[in-house]
Length: 108
Length: 114
Image (cartoon, rainbow over all chains, first blue to last red; front, side, top):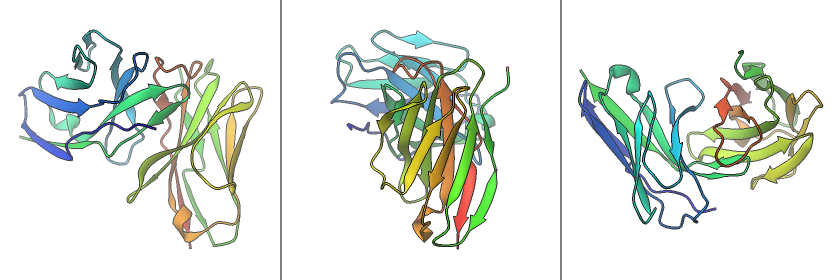
C-alpha cells in the first residue's frame, strides 16, 4: 500500500495560519485524500477529505494540487488545542493506511 | 448520537494468554475497522468487517482474528499473546467503509502483555 510523505514535525504560533504539506505521488485517480489528527491520549479524529478540488469545513481547508500528487492542510488560526499529530492518508475501502504523520507544536 | 465505544479500556495479560476486545460502532454504521498503534510501528491496519464479513485484512499473523455480529458490533481476538502485542488497539466505524466516508474512532483499548 502506497503511503504518503509528510514532514516529521512543524511549529506554529497561536492564532497564525498553519500549512501542513503532504506528498502522495503514487495516488490513483479515484483515491480520496483524508486528513486525520490525533490528540494526546485519544483516538484519531477526522479533519477533512477531498478528491480533486479544494475543500473547506469548520475545522480546516484542504488544497489539492492539480496533478493530485500533493496536498496541503490549512488551519486558518492555530490554537493550543490544535497541537496534535496530523496524518495525511490515502483513502481505501474500509481501511486507512497511516504514515508517520506530522507532529504540530503550537506556541502561545 | 453516541460515539464508538470500546471495552475494556485497559487490559493486562501475560504471555501465552488470549484476549478479546469489543467495539460498538455508531448506530447505523455497518463497517468496523481495527488498528494497532505502537510507538515503533505507528498506526497499522488490522482488518475491516462489513455486514459480518471480513472485507480487508492487514499484514498481521493469524493469531489476530475478529468477527462482526448482526448488530454491527465487532470483536477482535489475539491468541497466544506475545510481549510485542502490547499496544493501543483502536476500532473505527463508518457508514459503509467507502473510501470517501470518514471513519470515527473509539478511545482504544490499552493492552499490556507481561
